[in-house]
Each structure stands twice: as C-alpha cells, then as structure tokens.
Amino acid sequence: MILNLIDEAVAAGARAAVASGALGLSARTVERWRGGAVEDARHGPNTEPANMLSAKERARVITTMNLPEFRDLSPHQVVPLLADQGRYLASESTIYRILRDEDLLHHRERSQVPRRRPPSEHRATAPNQVWSWDITYLRACIAGTFFYLYLVVDVWSRKITGWEVHVEELADLAGTLIERTCTAMDVDPTTLVLHSDNGGPMKGSTMLATLERLGVMPSFSRPHVSDDNPFSEALFRTLKYCPQYPVAPFADLDAARAWVTAFVDWYNTVHLHSGIRFVTPDDRHFGREAGILATRVETYEAAKAAHPERWSGPARCWEPVGDVYLNPDDPADECGNTIPFKSQPNQAGPLGADQATTTRRNSKQV
Image (cartoon, rainbow, N blue to C red; front, side, top):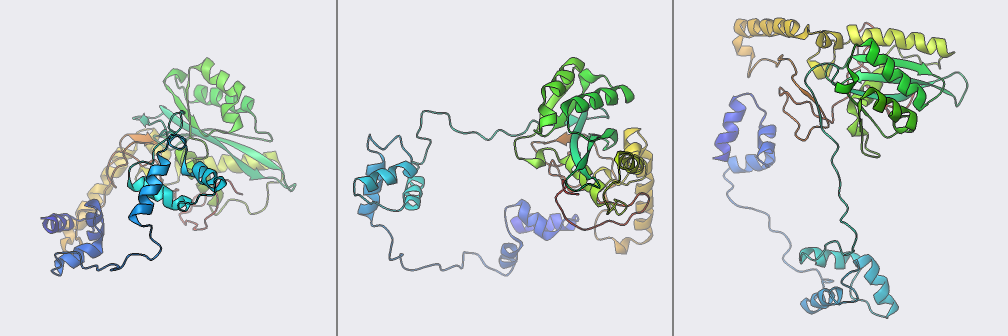
C-alpha cells in the first residue's frame, strides 16, 4: 500500500525522496522494499557489552535514587553525595540512562518545570498589518566606528516602509522612525503589529512608550533566537551582499544615507523577491502581482501545450502567495499560502542587475 501511495505521488510530480520522507521512510528503505525485502536484515551485536551493569547492580541504582534522601535530587547532585560516603554505583551518565529507561527521569525540584515557549504567531493578510524592524551596522571610515541603519519592512509585501541612518543606536530614534513611518504610509497604528528582536533600542523605555502612545502592538523574538525575526535578517543579507554594496567603508553619514536611498529604491521597485513569487515588493504592496503572475501562468501553459513531452509534471507554481505568517505554527508546502518562518535569505542582486552573490557571512557583519 505504501509503495502504491509513493508511486501515485511520483506520478503527480513529486520526487521519490520527498514522498518517502512524508511517510517517515528513507528513499533507501523504499528501494529495498521494491527489491523484495520484507523484514529487517540487520543482525546487530550478538553479545552483551562486557562492562554492562548486572541486573542486581541496576536494581541497586534504582533503589538508591528512590531513597527519601535522594528522590528529590538529580543524579548530578546525588553522585557527589555518594562519593562523599565512599559509595560508587555507576557513572552519572549511566544513572541518567537507567532512570530514563525506567521512566523515572522527571523534574525533581519544587520549582516549575522549564518550558520552551514558542514564539507568538502573527498573520498578515494584507499590507501594513505586520511590520518587522531591526538595526544593522554600516562600517564608517574610522576603525571601530559604525553608522546604524534602522530598517522597517512590511511582512506581507516585503516592502521597505521606513528607514533612517544615524550615528547612534537609541530607542528615541527608533520611536521617532516608527511614528514617521506610520504617518508616511497612512497606517492606523492601532491595527499594526511591530516585531523585533530583544535589543536595547527595541525594548527601551522610550520606544515602548512611543508604541503604547500610538497603540502599536509590540512583538519580540525569543532571546538568542535570530530565526524569530527572519524577514529583517533576510533583508539585511540582501543589503550586505548585493554586488554594489561598497567594499570600502562609508566616508561619512551623507554617503551612507545616499547609498541606502538607492538601495531602497532598487529593492522596492526592481528586485524580484524570491519569497513572493519573484515580483517586486511594490508590485505586491500595491496589488499588481495578480496580473503579473497570471501572465506567467499563460506563458507556461502555452509552452507546455506546445511541447507536452518536455514536462514530466505540473508547470511551475505561479499562484500569488496568500497570507503570510510570522513564526507560524505549521509551515506550508512549496505552493501553499503559509510562508515558513525559517525563510531562506533572498537572492541578492545589484541595483538593477540580477546576478546573485553566493558568499556566506553573518548578516550582522559588514
């Protein structure tokens, strides 16, 4: 039955490895099944390890760890106490393994069990609903000094809605930028979610007071998790690795602002963004993407009709990207409406060219 399901998926255009993975199987396992293998052919070890604890020693470990004086402590704490008494049962890792096998490795303190809270999910169904912003460094001509680029991007359309370059990294400047951007984009702040990481300017009292006064809902990444703010990180990578990014440091603040002005114009109006079916952010933001993508669909369908033998599956997906999720609970497939929160960095191009650079660096580096 599984082989039949995989065959149907492959016939519909899926790759065999992907279809196998969706069922929890490796492609190699499926190949063995097709060759007639009906059982596990692995033989494994036939002898027990010589240093394995005996059943009596294993029972002693379990009994000791459940004694009243030890039952509220972790093996990390119990092992030194036993050593002080001149007793050795087993190594710390072995005790952990035995407790895990016996389902006895649970939280042993009165404090609450540590929980990994997932990031908050935000859904954008149209422009100016969810914005993401961050600050990156632009190297100055004096060693060790930088200019600071404040950049706001619309999550739904990927359009850069606001930016400023300053010589300082301050919450006051960030708050002013957000207020100006809301005014320039004619956005009702009370309907806006503003996402950022946990940097000082993002959580500064002045910034938070500005957001509260405007009615903007703040959203923050988990500490030390850069993937929670993927749209800003991907945008910074595009900025830093486009071929026209200057190799030499910026001579002064005016030079940095002039270059960013040209980049923002190119990014919003020329750059074909890979996350939105290779239309420009402005095309998506202002509703022009449907007509552009419809033309592409007609072109591909005509090419497929002219030479059907050259197509082993469906034509390329040119359907408009629907709702966009920031840190979604469930990522979608290639042509679905949900954008994975661990989005891939955009392909960077020059201001007007389409060559992509493949150099990999940290997006915060210059």
